[in-house]
Length: 207
Image (cartoon, rainbow, N blue to C red; front, side):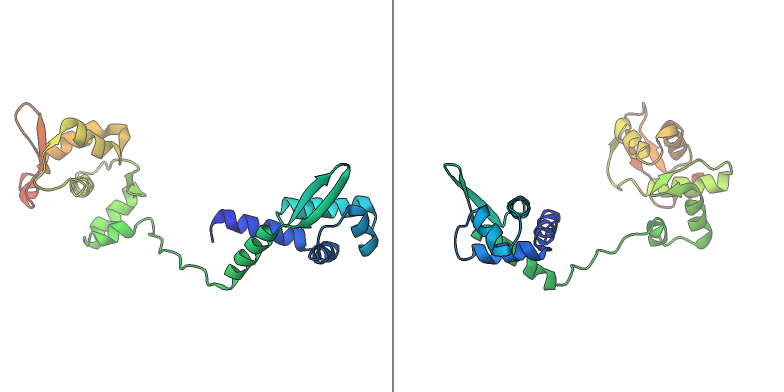
């Protein structure tokens, strides 16, 4: 059931959650009736009956037909059928919720050692850098992670490299790009036109 259907069903159920309205609905099953006729049969004042009919109309369970100054009310068959259909869904089990990824689940998925994982937890939140480490050793862990955001055997323009880094740390993506190149995680052609991911292990030798 969609959210809209949920709201519609609740609206109908609220309209029916009154004994007099149920009595009015049962009387209308026999055919059209005026407010005066209904008021006599349910032993209520006409203003009260008019109020109940308005609530039933708003819920789509009753329709109104004007004939001169006379108002005739009748069951809205399509609205009642819709109510029955939506009410039947109540018995169906709720769909299973998709598992929600915890904030640092992606870190564990990297399969790195506990010390490196702790560095990422310390400096990231929701796959974004919160600040840059001051210690070189921790910076290498951050750069190693940033390198995983790039595809192997693909050439990147400088604008594309910037876009990748901006997504995780817009405050100083230029420094990150420079460090990735200087420490060997990314290669850059002469003139800086194209960038590509360094082969695994080579960055460690340069670092």
